Length: 236
Image (tube, rainbow, N blue to C red; front, side, top):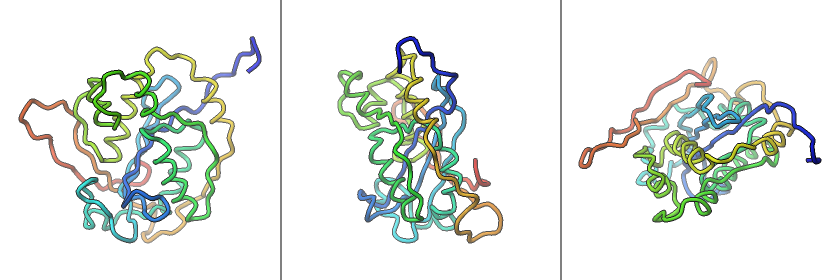
Protein backbone atom coordinates (compact mmCIF):
# COMPACT_ATOMS: atom_id res chain seq x y z
CA UNK A 1 0.00 0.00 0.00
CA UNK A 2 1.36 3.44 -0.91
CA UNK A 3 2.22 5.81 1.97
CA UNK A 4 -0.73 7.97 2.88
CA UNK A 5 -3.20 5.95 0.81
CA UNK A 6 -6.39 5.11 2.66
CA UNK A 7 -8.25 1.92 1.87
CA UNK A 8 -12.00 2.12 1.27
CA UNK A 9 -14.35 0.68 3.91
CA UNK A 10 -13.74 -3.02 4.49
CA UNK A 11 -16.24 -5.50 3.12
CA UNK A 12 -16.31 -9.21 3.83
CA UNK A 13 -14.59 -10.34 7.00
CA UNK A 14 -13.32 -13.66 8.29
CA UNK A 15 -14.51 -17.22 7.79
CA UNK A 16 -13.42 -19.44 10.69
CA UNK A 17 -13.54 -23.01 9.42
CA UNK A 18 -13.18 -26.47 10.87
CA UNK A 19 -13.66 -29.89 9.33
CA UNK A 20 -13.81 -33.36 10.82
CA UNK A 21 -12.66 -36.04 8.41
CA UNK A 22 -12.57 -39.81 7.93
CA UNK A 23 -8.76 -39.75 8.14
CA UNK A 24 -5.70 -37.54 7.87
CA UNK A 25 -5.16 -37.37 4.11
CA UNK A 26 -7.23 -34.96 2.00
CA UNK A 27 -6.45 -37.18 -1.00
CA UNK A 28 -7.57 -40.49 0.52
CA UNK A 29 -10.15 -39.41 3.08
CA UNK A 30 -13.35 -37.39 3.10
CA UNK A 31 -14.94 -34.61 5.11
CA UNK A 32 -17.61 -35.91 7.52
CA UNK A 33 -18.49 -32.60 9.18
CA UNK A 34 -17.92 -28.95 8.31
CA UNK A 35 -18.54 -25.70 10.17
CA UNK A 36 -18.03 -22.04 9.34
CA UNK A 37 -18.28 -19.15 11.80
CA UNK A 38 -18.47 -15.78 10.05
CA UNK A 39 -16.80 -12.77 11.68
CA UNK A 40 -16.85 -9.16 10.57
CA UNK A 41 -13.76 -6.95 10.34
CA UNK A 42 -13.88 -6.36 14.11
CA UNK A 43 -14.13 -10.09 14.87
CA UNK A 44 -17.80 -9.92 15.83
CA UNK A 45 -19.83 -13.02 14.98
CA UNK A 46 -22.14 -12.53 12.00
CA UNK A 47 -23.44 -16.06 11.49
CA UNK A 48 -22.77 -19.80 11.63
CA UNK A 49 -23.12 -22.81 9.35
CA UNK A 50 -22.55 -26.43 10.24
CA UNK A 51 -23.64 -29.87 9.17
CA UNK A 52 -22.60 -33.48 9.18
CA UNK A 53 -21.60 -34.75 5.73
CA UNK A 54 -22.29 -38.15 4.21
CA UNK A 55 -18.82 -39.26 3.00
CA UNK A 56 -20.34 -42.05 0.89
CA UNK A 57 -18.12 -44.50 2.75
CA UNK A 58 -16.66 -45.13 6.21
CA UNK A 59 -16.72 -42.22 8.67
CA UNK A 60 -13.28 -43.16 10.00
CA UNK A 61 -12.05 -42.69 13.59
CA UNK A 62 -15.26 -42.49 15.61
CA UNK A 63 -13.13 -42.60 18.80
CA UNK A 64 -11.73 -39.18 17.81
CA UNK A 65 -14.59 -37.23 16.23
CA UNK A 66 -17.43 -39.28 17.83
CA UNK A 67 -19.36 -39.45 14.57
CA UNK A 68 -20.89 -42.86 13.95
CA UNK A 69 -21.97 -44.32 10.64
CA UNK A 70 -25.58 -43.99 11.77
CA UNK A 71 -25.12 -40.25 12.42
CA UNK A 72 -24.51 -39.47 8.74
CA UNK A 73 -27.56 -41.34 7.44
CA UNK A 74 -29.68 -38.66 5.78
CA UNK A 75 -26.90 -36.05 5.95
CA UNK A 76 -26.08 -34.14 2.74
CA UNK A 77 -23.16 -35.08 0.54
CA UNK A 78 -20.46 -32.45 0.13
CA UNK A 79 -21.56 -31.47 -3.37
CA UNK A 80 -25.04 -30.71 -2.02
CA UNK A 81 -23.76 -28.06 0.40
CA UNK A 82 -20.98 -26.79 -1.90
CA UNK A 83 -23.03 -23.83 -3.23
CA UNK A 84 -23.79 -22.59 0.30
CA UNK A 85 -20.17 -23.04 1.39
CA UNK A 86 -18.87 -21.06 -1.58
CA UNK A 87 -21.20 -18.20 -0.73
CA UNK A 88 -20.02 -18.22 2.90
CA UNK A 89 -16.29 -18.34 2.13
CA UNK A 90 -16.20 -15.91 -0.80
CA UNK A 91 -14.46 -12.62 -0.10
CA UNK A 92 -13.29 -13.56 3.39
CA UNK A 93 -9.98 -14.28 5.10
CA UNK A 94 -9.82 -17.98 5.98
CA UNK A 95 -9.12 -18.74 9.67
CA UNK A 96 -8.43 -22.05 11.36
CA UNK A 97 -6.36 -23.79 13.98
CA UNK A 98 -3.71 -25.36 11.74
CA UNK A 99 -5.66 -23.71 8.93
CA UNK A 100 -3.65 -25.35 6.15
CA UNK A 101 -5.15 -28.72 7.11
CA UNK A 102 -8.77 -27.53 6.97
CA UNK A 103 -8.02 -25.62 3.78
CA UNK A 104 -6.50 -28.71 2.13
CA UNK A 105 -9.59 -30.81 2.88
CA UNK A 106 -11.92 -28.12 1.54
CA UNK A 107 -9.83 -27.60 -1.59
CA UNK A 108 -9.78 -31.34 -2.28
CA UNK A 109 -13.52 -31.76 -1.74
CA UNK A 110 -14.24 -28.88 -4.12
CA UNK A 111 -11.72 -30.27 -6.62
CA UNK A 112 -13.65 -33.56 -6.64
CA UNK A 113 -16.65 -31.71 -8.05
CA UNK A 114 -14.55 -29.68 -10.49
CA UNK A 115 -14.49 -26.38 -8.58
CA UNK A 116 -11.02 -24.83 -8.01
CA UNK A 117 -10.75 -22.50 -5.02
CA UNK A 118 -8.71 -19.28 -5.23
CA UNK A 119 -5.60 -18.81 -3.11
CA UNK A 120 -7.01 -16.78 -0.23
CA UNK A 121 -5.31 -14.91 2.63
CA UNK A 122 -5.42 -16.96 5.82
CA UNK A 123 -4.79 -16.70 9.55
CA UNK A 124 -3.64 -19.65 11.64
CA UNK A 125 -4.44 -19.49 15.36
CA UNK A 126 -1.90 -22.27 16.01
CA UNK A 127 0.88 -20.03 14.66
CA UNK A 128 -0.49 -17.06 16.58
CA UNK A 129 -0.56 -19.13 19.77
CA UNK A 130 3.09 -20.15 19.35
CA UNK A 131 4.00 -16.48 19.20
CA UNK A 132 1.63 -15.01 21.78
CA UNK A 133 0.47 -17.74 24.18
CA UNK A 134 3.51 -18.37 26.34
CA UNK A 135 3.28 -21.19 28.84
CA UNK A 136 0.73 -23.29 26.98
CA UNK A 137 1.18 -26.99 27.68
CA UNK A 138 0.91 -27.63 23.95
CA UNK A 139 -0.45 -25.95 20.87
CA UNK A 140 -3.39 -28.14 19.96
CA UNK A 141 -6.68 -26.28 20.12
CA UNK A 142 -7.73 -27.79 23.46
CA UNK A 143 -4.42 -26.81 25.12
CA UNK A 144 -4.55 -23.29 23.67
CA UNK A 145 -8.15 -22.75 24.76
CA UNK A 146 -7.25 -23.93 28.28
CA UNK A 147 -4.14 -21.73 28.43
CA UNK A 148 -6.21 -18.74 27.32
CA UNK A 149 -8.78 -19.43 30.05
CA UNK A 150 -11.65 -19.73 27.58
CA UNK A 151 -13.40 -22.64 29.30
CA UNK A 152 -14.60 -26.07 28.22
CA UNK A 153 -15.90 -26.58 24.70
CA UNK A 154 -17.04 -29.64 22.71
CA UNK A 155 -13.69 -30.58 21.15
CA UNK A 156 -13.55 -32.48 17.86
CA UNK A 157 -16.94 -31.23 16.76
CA UNK A 158 -16.65 -28.95 13.77
CA UNK A 159 -18.91 -26.23 15.20
CA UNK A 160 -17.35 -26.45 18.67
CA UNK A 161 -13.84 -26.20 17.24
CA UNK A 162 -14.77 -23.31 14.92
CA UNK A 163 -16.42 -21.35 17.75
CA UNK A 164 -13.44 -21.98 20.02
CA UNK A 165 -11.04 -20.92 17.26
CA UNK A 166 -12.98 -17.68 16.81
CA UNK A 167 -12.74 -17.00 20.56
CA UNK A 168 -9.03 -17.85 20.51
CA UNK A 169 -8.47 -15.46 17.58
CA UNK A 170 -10.10 -12.65 19.55
CA UNK A 171 -7.98 -13.47 22.59
CA UNK A 172 -4.70 -13.61 20.66
CA UNK A 173 -5.27 -10.48 18.58
CA UNK A 174 -6.98 -8.17 21.06
CA UNK A 175 -4.34 -5.47 20.52
CA UNK A 176 -4.44 -5.52 16.71
CA UNK A 177 -6.75 -3.05 15.00
CA UNK A 178 -5.64 -2.94 11.35
CA UNK A 179 -7.09 -5.93 9.49
CA UNK A 180 -7.72 -3.87 6.38
CA UNK A 181 -4.95 -5.18 4.03
CA UNK A 182 -5.77 -8.92 4.21
CA UNK A 183 -9.50 -8.19 4.26
CA UNK A 184 -9.26 -6.10 1.11
CA UNK A 185 -7.08 -8.71 -0.56
CA UNK A 186 -9.67 -11.41 0.22
CA UNK A 187 -12.58 -9.23 -0.86
CA UNK A 188 -10.96 -8.57 -4.24
CA UNK A 189 -10.46 -12.22 -5.23
CA UNK A 190 -12.78 -13.77 -7.82
CA UNK A 191 -14.69 -16.75 -6.44
CA UNK A 192 -16.61 -19.45 -8.28
CA UNK A 193 -20.36 -19.59 -7.72
CA UNK A 194 -22.76 -22.50 -8.04
CA UNK A 195 -26.42 -21.84 -8.66
CA UNK A 196 -27.74 -24.76 -6.62
CA UNK A 197 -26.93 -28.16 -5.21
CA UNK A 198 -25.05 -30.13 -7.86
CA UNK A 199 -26.59 -33.45 -6.92
CA UNK A 200 -29.77 -33.67 -4.91
CA UNK A 201 -31.23 -36.79 -3.42
CA UNK A 202 -34.10 -34.78 -1.94
CA UNK A 203 -36.67 -32.37 -3.29
CA UNK A 204 -35.85 -28.78 -2.34
CA UNK A 205 -32.76 -27.56 -0.46
CA UNK A 206 -30.54 -30.28 1.06
CA UNK A 207 -31.23 -30.95 4.74
CA UNK A 208 -28.48 -30.15 7.24
CA UNK A 209 -27.71 -32.05 10.43
CA UNK A 210 -26.04 -29.95 13.13
CA UNK A 211 -24.09 -31.60 15.92
CA UNK A 212 -23.42 -29.46 18.96
CA UNK A 213 -23.18 -29.33 22.74
CA UNK A 214 -23.34 -26.37 25.13
CA UNK A 215 -20.12 -24.61 26.11
CA UNK A 216 -18.82 -24.70 29.69
CA UNK A 217 -16.90 -24.33 31.86
CA UNK A 218 -18.46 -27.07 33.96
CA UNK A 219 -17.79 -27.65 37.69
CA UNK A 220 -15.14 -30.15 38.71
CA UNK A 221 -16.46 -33.68 38.46
CA UNK A 222 -19.53 -32.72 36.40
CA UNK A 223 -19.82 -34.56 33.10
CA UNK A 224 -20.35 -32.12 30.18
CA UNK A 225 -23.58 -32.61 28.22
CA UNK A 226 -23.53 -35.02 25.31
CA UNK A 227 -23.91 -34.25 21.63
CA UNK A 228 -27.27 -33.29 20.19
CA UNK A 229 -28.10 -33.91 16.52
CA UNK A 230 -30.56 -31.40 15.11
CA UNK A 231 -32.09 -31.55 11.63
CA UNK A 232 -32.11 -28.08 10.05
CA UNK A 233 -33.22 -26.46 6.84
CA UNK A 234 -30.50 -25.42 4.40
CA UNK A 235 -28.30 -22.46 5.14
CA UNK A 236 -28.60 -22.38 8.93
